[in-house]
Length: 443
Image 1 (cartoon, rainbow, N blue to C red):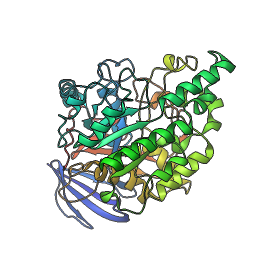
Image 2 (cartoon, helix red, strand yellow; image 1 turned 60 degrees about the vertical axis):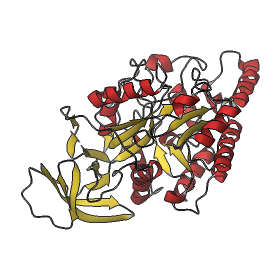
Image 3 (cartoon, helix red, strand yellow; image 1 turned 120 degrees about the vertical axis):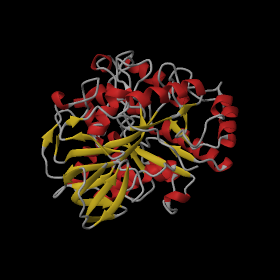
């Protein structure tokens, strides 16, 4: 099967240039200025920009056990509509993914239902060290540690266990960093003032910058002590940026960091309008934090942009502060939101592709993805940078049916998403006939 993309404007490896791309079956066969061949399918991409597929290194697709919020099927469908061709999913499902058996079951489920390429993280707890150390680095993305979370029994606060995981694991360790003792102390203080009726705007005071920095700095200290390959998820504060090095090329870094779309887009000024719809952990914080995170991204202190896609039903989100869960759906709107920041002159197209496509592949050592290169899997996205549209309920694909971007006007639109050479999404329509592949890693 030959697919030819004609006259595209490629954004790849720091350059923007016009080229044709020939795909044979699952992989890119040729990237050349002019390819003259009779292909089975030809896409006229004149005026469109061709990007490598986005790799989202942090999502919560809610399956198994929380499928009223979302499923691998529904959320991967939304992901490919948003130009995300590969995702890595977190272990806090129900049951939590704390054994190799449960991990294998998730992979089997995805093989039957996922439209995007997939990997699942092995979860760590205070009790499952033996299972964690069995994880195969060749076909599992990472070990996930909640270093400050009350998600069931997934809070790892036993320092001896943390030392053992950091010292013994052959895997990349990815961490959620918020200090639980500081959070609990802040809750007690704020309840004295408000009781149970805490305003959503107090969320960044409860899950504070201090809680983030204390936990992140501990993770970095452990990683330096044991020379562990550490990836710190969803940095949300200006102060945390001092923990990360921008002097080394990414391939040589042992400690890397990620920022999420919501921490680049929203700040505390949005709480009055958005309320619990922008309640995330870590919290959306000050406008100065948002600005610093974008600058840290541009200066390469932060290496990856992700979504932390975490759908909840609107009914759940409409609860009071202590009842409304944290998290929100983002995979369909992440790339359009970043392209809007480009339109506003805040970041370049080359830097967006670096942080959303190239760097996740480098960070996790993903096999033959994340770049437009001959011999690589043809995970590709075509974008019209001059197509105005508005986020409305009727065009939201998440199972939960809402988005924190609802009502937002975007000026760039994804026209095609190719997964392993297959046109999975085209002009609003999804081809449901072909499922995607498990990611593998060059480790």
